Length: 128
Image (cartoon, rainbow, N blue to C red; front, side, top):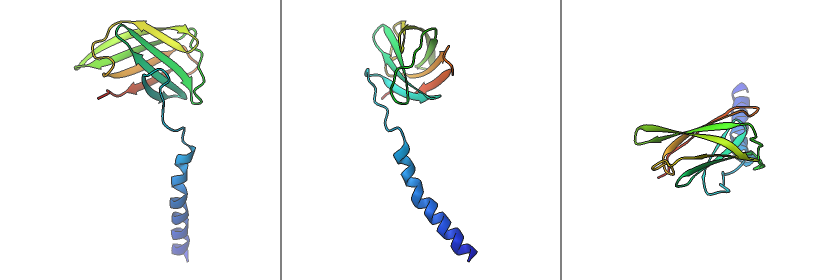
């Protein structure tokens, strides 16, 4: 009897577990054409242009997170070398910095945001 109860319990849990994916937030869709990451309750979108790096911060509902007074650092890992770019708040949910990073649009990056209620740190893998 005990074995039957264990079997039925495990079977029910096994059938219920796939439904957990229905509660997930879904795929991250970049609003500005950048790369996305989730960390510490926030979504980060890193947009790398020729001489400018932008970081957009939103919550899990894609609502802008106020970044006034915050700062960020992006560390690009390019060809085995690190290149750092400091970002400052420029509007509601945008941190930006001016620097050209060769291959930065494809390179792996580590983003750290300070000055928010919860600091954020995320890694964005290299794009192929």
